[in-house]
Image (cartoon, rainbow, N blue to C red; front, side):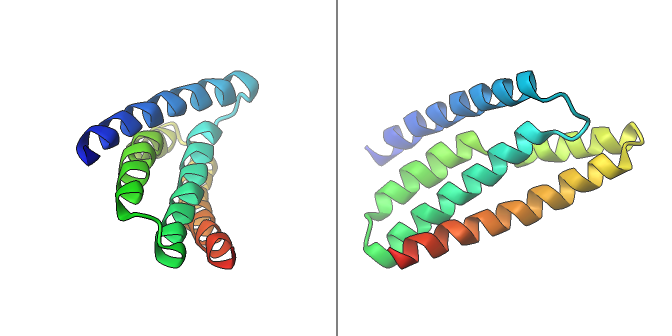
Length: 122
């Protein structure tokens, strides 16, 4: 049952990523791939919250698997962030590449920590 729920959650996460990506790109035109950054940061925040719920509040580990591995795995996209960074470097958009690389990593780790912190305080 956990496997099927994880598959479904992954599919929902992928569709959510597609929708968020399209919405952000339709509103903001930029060399920096803000849509991918926003997706990875928000997914990291959610995953931190899930981990906090499991660690500090006894949430069932199955839910962390389904939502963390499934939904967040389908929603977030490290491979796209990596590809976009390489393309920016190839286009000699070094500042945009640096913002993407450092911004994605730093903001995602901070968002995960914040999600974990907030759930530990509840």
